[in-house]
Length: 324
Image 1 (cartoon, rainbow, N blue to C red):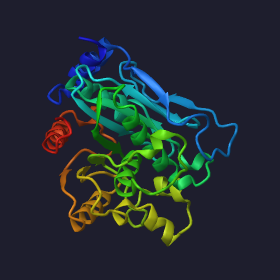
Image 2: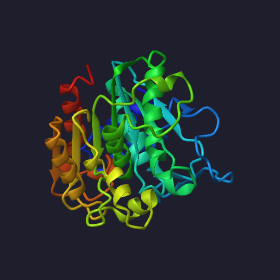
Image 3: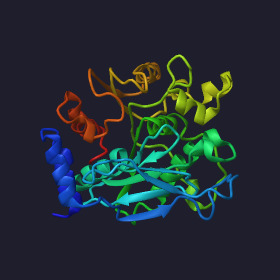
Image 4: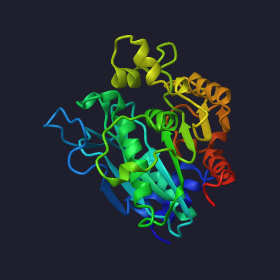
């Protein structure tokens, strides 16, 4: 059993108390990817700030539990967690952070460590943050997500991935990136840079988890909204960057998850997305739990019914053929 197996055993245990999970993490040591690759050859498109330099901040006060966040992202990348025994399935994971940062551990590495022993190769995406100085800033995260999907498909044989079985999952603002990719996967938001960009960017299925969806100030997460499209009211930008208003019949099947008591991103974001998917006749499954708050990922579910969500997702995705 390697470090990721030990960690996965701890994280999978929604029946384990928090101290047991912490001990499992400590025994496993830091979770690290098997590889990391830049998304773009050379500089990412549209760099405006030549002084932009990546910064990692550790936010946890518990040495057994890491909670790192990345900002000032100049070189967007994929951190790769290879499946222990690949079954061809792959998942592109987009952590959250309010478009102010991208978290590494609780919505990225931990989920990848849970899925890798189940045969799923995971790709954690560290996407550009729109307020950090990019041309066409509102579309920078989507461009990174499209590029990531195309790059995974172009190199699928290298990673033992079936190019037809690549899903996408995102959390909070990363849930917005995920929902945006599902709705606008074929929107031209960057110029092709190599042969990989001739491939499709549509995920097989999508799982926006407690996602930022609407840019309508009535229900928007205003921090994410302002970082993405600015503080001024602009009806055209609000419509373009609200995935619920961009859904079509070609949007992939979707798994939706939120907590009713989310005090950061109102549950109405997921409810609006569900209504749009239903109108477009897109297959979906939705779970709204009474308690969970925001940003629970895996570690924040202990002792709550919402702890069931990873298994619910796994069963749903398997029913749609992602896991073979």
